[in-house]
Image 1 (cartoon, helix red, strand yellow):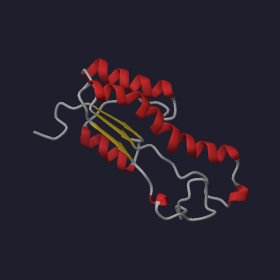
Image 2 (cartoon, helix red, strand yellow):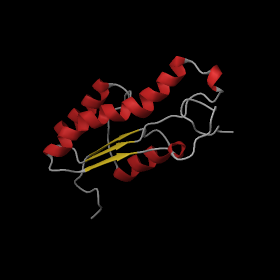
Image 3 (cartoon, one colour):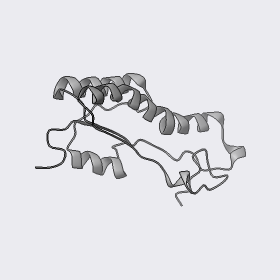
Image 4 (cartoon, helix red, strand yellow):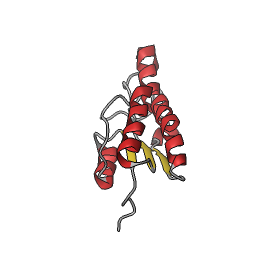
Length: 133
C-alpha cells in the first residue's frame, strides 16, 4: 500500500520538473488552468472534493524565474508576473484548499521555494535567481 493510496492531491506547476514528477508519482488527475487565478483554485478544490470526496494534499509548486535582465531593464509588468505566479498563486491555492483539507481531518500542504531565498543573484531579475545560461 502506497502512502498516497486513498488520498486526493492538487499539484500546481505540474508541467515540468518537480511538479511533473510529483504528479506522476501521485497519479493525480486535475484541472488545467491559471495558477494565479482564484477561480482556478476554487475549481480545482471543488472538483477534488466532488469527484473524490475531499482533499488531503496541496502541493503549490508553480513558479518562474522571470526575465533575466538588469533591474533598470525590468518593467513593472515583469515584476508583477513573477509575484503573481510565485506569491499570489500559492496564496490563492492555500486559501481555497485549507478549508477542504481541514474538513477532511487534516493533511499536507507543501510549498516549493527557491534557492534564491537563500542566495540571491543581484541584478538578474525580479525573482533573484541565476540565469539559465
